[in-house]
Amino acid sequence: MKTYKNFIAGKLMDSKSGRTFENRNPADWDEVVGIFPKSNAEDINMAIEAAKKAYKKWRTVPWPKRSEIMRRAAEIMIEKKEEIAQLMTREMGKVINETRGDFQEGIDTALYASIEGRKFFGYTLPSELQNKSCMTKREPLGVWGLITPWNFPIAIPTWKVFPCILSGNTAVIKPATYTPACVGEFAQILQEAGLPDGVLNVVYGGGGEIGEAILSHPDIVGVSFTGSSEIGRRIGEVCGNTLKRCSLELGGKNGQVVLKDADLELALEGVLWGAFGTTGQRCTATSRLILEEPIYDKFIEMLKQKTESLKLGNGLNKDIDVGPMVSESQCESVHSYVEIGKKEGAKLITGGESYKEGECVKGWYYKPTIFIDVLPTMRIAQEEIFGPVLSVIKAKDFKEAIEILNNTVYGLSSSIYTNDLNKAHKAIELAETGIVYINAPTIGAECHMPFGGMKNTGNGHREGGWTAYEIFTEIKSIYIDYSGSLQKAQIDTWE
Ligand code: UN1
Image (cartoon, rainbow, N blue to C red; front, side):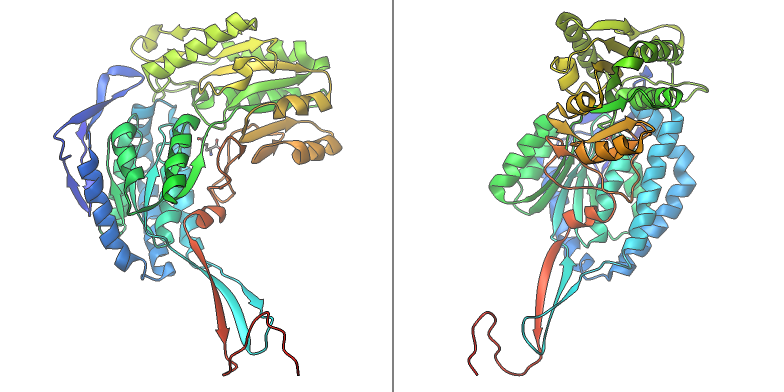
């Protein structure tokens, strides 16, 4: 068990509040993973002050120099991959192969940043006038607030931190209270890699207290948030009022469509991974399976059998498929949806209860759960559950399958299994989601591709890839007149 401290201006320090909170292993609630400061607004103010001070110098450091720090960070991360993956499994619960993957996504994001720093393009355009040129360049904004979730304790913080600081901004990050240790370790890696003091500051604590303190601070220029739609709305509201930039990555209700001509074995592997990987706790998780009528019964039979063979247990142990849920309250929330599904008349064919056998007695385990005969309008087909619950819906044909796929307020990820080229392309065109997979599950986005969703999944931004840099920079349009005389744009001239 380790005691963590806030990281402000390059120094580790306790909270001014004098309070702490602990973080327990969801696979073994007797294990305290770490003790963290329960910070208050005073800590946030100090962190923002440190970031503001660091910004003055950091923004003048050339992009390629900044990106060298990202490369060094990647090198240290490669060395620490196993150690931090194990810590991540202990604090978050997902199985070790997945926490290695989460950390690898962080390494990839660092390497991507190290390349991006040498090709941070603006563009040149012709002028309407002679002897005049037009071009654009990108610049940082100032101090950002980064608020990150618990389901990807390293990948998502790196999606935000690297583009934010490579662009010349500085930041205060508030990690999720369920998974604060990983961000603490990540900040130490950045310091070791040579990041100047105050460029990234870490403050631990609850969203209600310190999240609000970040939002309301006048020196914060923008907020990047990944989490629930409810909190996202609140952040959007405050940022709207104070004219802060705001990037929101919110819920999903992702569907996998399997058409009658699909490779069913492949589709089966895909849905098992998409629905029950990370114990269903991804915003990209598959929570609806839409089956074309002719294969409905057969596929359900295959799915039930395979689902029941998944092994639950501590993610650090060998051959475990599904780890625990992150917390008791998350387990309860999932179970309440199972009760709702039953009341709505959907048919529960497996799971539907917590699991406390064998090595799982002291953890927040929930059995992989499948409802069939779900109607598209039911709450379990509409609301984000964020757990291992799959709602199976029947579609009479391709057209109806796409209608069902789009029948949700969310629009993050979708997947279509088919061998019909025409239908695959039509589905890509019609799917109302920011990410579309063909013959692959709804999870597994890569760090150099835009990541984000349509409709209520967000507010139009895309993290990942080049598009993340658009979030964290201002664009400047520059006109250079080398005619030596006053040239008036748009004013008619008579000669
Ligand atoms: C999330 O679900 O919150 O595409 C992020 C994926 C991962 C990232 C998921 N690379 O599933």
